[in-house]
Length: 411
Image (cartoon, rainbow, N blue to C red; front, side):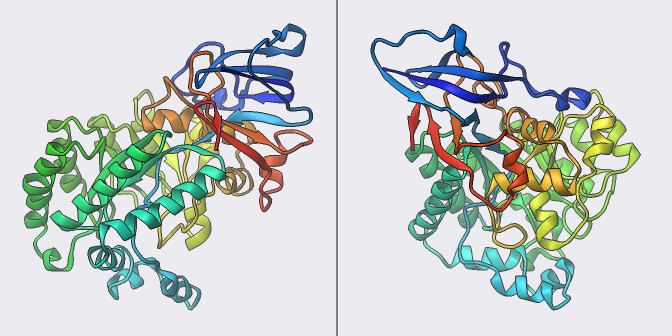
């Protein structure tokens, strides 16, 4: 069965040839066809072009998209949507003047989430996570990476990754699982970092590999969390099990972690609210993509990733939500794109590239997702009638999505 969209006002992110990512000045180029058609067959994009070349469809469904925009679904390459409970009190604590570090030192932050997760059953966590996944899909996300990291025990980390595996089995969107046992040091290992690293490497990783529960490995490389040397041990261990690295780095401080991530061929380095010239030089001509998380900066009032500086240096950039209970309790990629435009001074073209094709690269799925390309999966956003796609970041508080299509079927 075929589905034919006709009279599309703007068909956005059209790529005749599949590309991995866009970088530097190329991020400002967003290919569009005005007054377009789009043909879907068996869940993939079969053809597209201007209406003057539109084929006639004898069998199938024809959808008139007059006045509407079609673009690829958002690719959210950095989330923590599997968690228990919430951290609403910490939100109020920050309003009352406590910093992220002060909250963490009082037993809040990641350790707070870990306590709740270890006290909650897998089924309850699954149902809550399923609800969040349904919500972000309705908001246009058509591929998502999900991290563990709120277990911090062998059983807790396995519980989280098994929940992610269940989501993979029950949803048709691409879901990548990232093992983030190195998210924080549990209280009992606060003075015994080597002991916790041994637990991650010698107990957690073998069991995760045995059940095939992870696609990537991660660590919170930051002052007061995991050092460069400790993160290198994590990345080395991940490589032995075929898990490429996707690393949290430079959220609050720059401690030469990005160079180490590039040296170990990390797929992505995420956060980068603080970026030095040396960091930029390390990323140039590497395969590692920086990922900015602007709604985290918005929520906890920290600097924004210096997108303009990084793109001027020829770097690619991806955008993701960082959806988590403490520092970004939102998986709304539309808000991320708008915030990147408003606060990071990215153009709509750059932000959409960052949230689609570059997000797909940061998830390792750019061969099948992230652009309107023949043979790629038909994961699409159909908007309500718009003046232009610029309206998406302009009306940052409104939901302008009419329908979301996954593998050729509306959800």
